[in-house]
Image 1 (cartoon, rainbow, N blue to C red):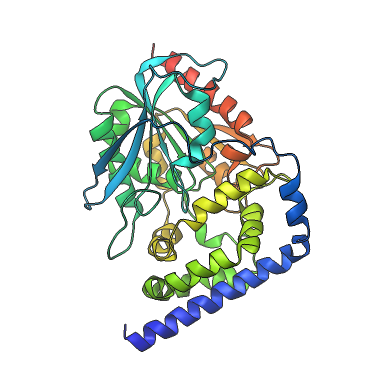
Image 2 (cartoon, rainbow, N blue to C red):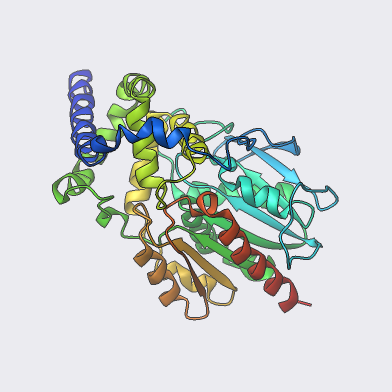
Length: 366
């Protein structure tokens, strides 16, 4: 694509982003006056050390694509600051947490503090996210994310039993992993938790926007991919400058409760804003094309729990229902009044669901 075409593409992407932002802003503009008030209310998470948990053992692992991934390992022997009733120490099992798009391992903040000392846990930043390395060229693919998960397992959990927990794109990565490494799943994976995710049809999700804007995403994907590096700096700066709108959009798309914890919204906003537009553009194609409903057959013999908030606008509840229908033995657990980051928004409920699942998985193989 020529420089002129790239510049035109960047302008077109900017225009569509502007239309989408304006559309959403129309719905939230009336809420702007609530911003200061909502941030001033008593917040139970105001002093929570988001993004600053005590250092666990950290490792760098290198994917087949040559990207260094940042991982942290929390061993069973460590004593956590919190606990979840009903769980028991299992030192032969490793739980691996796989985060979603535009987030990082900190998405599992409350799961890390809640289960610390009870299970060996591994958290890592997906390619292009958090402290992990970015691609210099080309697109990210879910197959690459499956390879990344296999790398983490091979390097950091080479033996023992596994439980995989994926949120949003992390759940998609687990599906791709199961399709790509079915023998490994069959031999070592005791259970899988899929939180706020989808097995496909993401191109049909409107995100609450008018149909014409949602439908424009497909034809613009090639343009967005090329224009991403050109527009990235400008849009990233704009995201910082328009922090109030960004905060409100984060609240709208990430949360269901009203009002959610302002500290939680700000934390998710920081994770979102730390993801470059260039990285976002390089992921769009694979997420848009994701279709692994048939690949779920590789999970038919594995215990699965599917968790979703009933107010999720990003991966709506019907997507979790579709997964549970494809896996008749799977448990569908709905989090009332919760949005896309239910695992942060209502961590107590989600942790209780996970605790019960982890315990059942552990008992089933004894």
